[in-house]
Image (cartoon, rainbow, N blue to C red):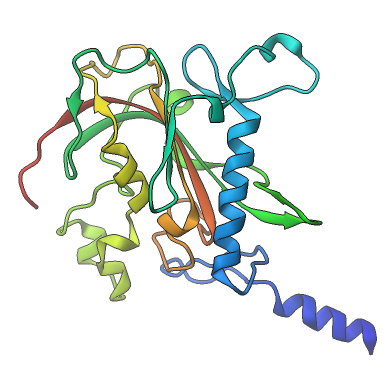
Length: 247
């Protein structure tokens, strides 16, 4: 009986995946969302201390066996700022456009990026950011080699077919698709004026805690796995921005 009770208890603490319009995570989570928010902040700090930028601005993890990265600056030692939402943006020195164009909300953007996510969890009293999971179709560096144009988590039109054909009220809302923390932090940078075929030199990193992303709300199924409680890391360069007519 004791074993049966434990199995039932363990099962009750797990979430199982459900329909596409309402993705749910399979990872155990604290009941109090404020605890998850604290986990996120601690894991972000840990991530910033354990990673650095290589010669082209890619995020790399410090090696414990190779001394070649010993003189690299950790992300937390680079210019960075935390916004009220908890989103952190890191500016890479000497990698910003000389005559950059201000980015305003709603601009059409061409972005070279590598995006990944993680869930911050408590591992025997130590907060960890777990396995880093690539955000499917948003690693333009290794997948296509050209910038992505207006990813849906940045901008989606009111008449987009996903919204027009949505079968639930929540899926008709832009918030179902957008990652607000990313949009907020992106406006702290300036855009280059580069052709799509030019070599990249990434200009920064945006780290969005779950509360500034989708938290525990229903969201669009970008990847086949849930973004519930997930923190996002965007390593990017804005190649170009263009003012957009009002939607």
